[in-house]
Length: 250
Image 1 (cartoon, rainbow, N blue to C red):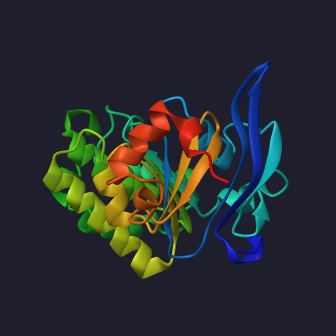
Image 2 (image 1 turned 135 degrees about the vertical axis):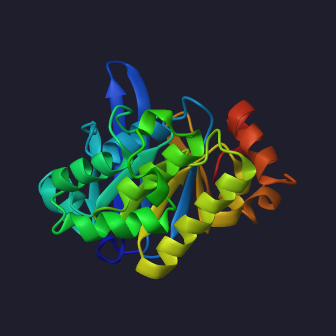
């Protein structure tokens, strides 16, 4: 897909720390309305890749374009409709749900934040927690607050790092449904990292397997296991983690 037609287009991303190569030659794209899974074992380079896509880390090589804007040269325009949330990055626990959403809305430059916050409180079933401090909420409730925060600027690109980690099955299902509805309604693109293969099979139309800092496999999560002699996506994940050299893409 041409970069101009992609919500996210990254080419040849690399990150080196001295002689250590964390990411090597990663290229990916996300089309409007597409949820793409970024999979791989711990240490494969997923978080480093996301940090480069967000501009948190400067790539050693490669380019990132978001909505047609070069991240290095047009940082503000590229990130203005980009959002990120992760289960390991909770919002300030000493602030209430409403205070957190208000403060982040101000940071993001959201015009008329009041109506936006009220809508998100309803959509994410958070109205009854409006005045509760985030630090006393359950994991599922904190996850919903994080997603509401991520929606404040109506993102065209949403980066989700382990969005259902540590959630019970019913809450995880709710989160998956909310993300699918958001993508269907807005045409946004999503990059979703997870160790939960059920999540991936249910929400992702395409997956990328990272191993040792490079993309090893790419394809439909429902068809990819069989193409590599595995019964399930979980079996394929384990093989990538344990024996990546046996699965090298042509």
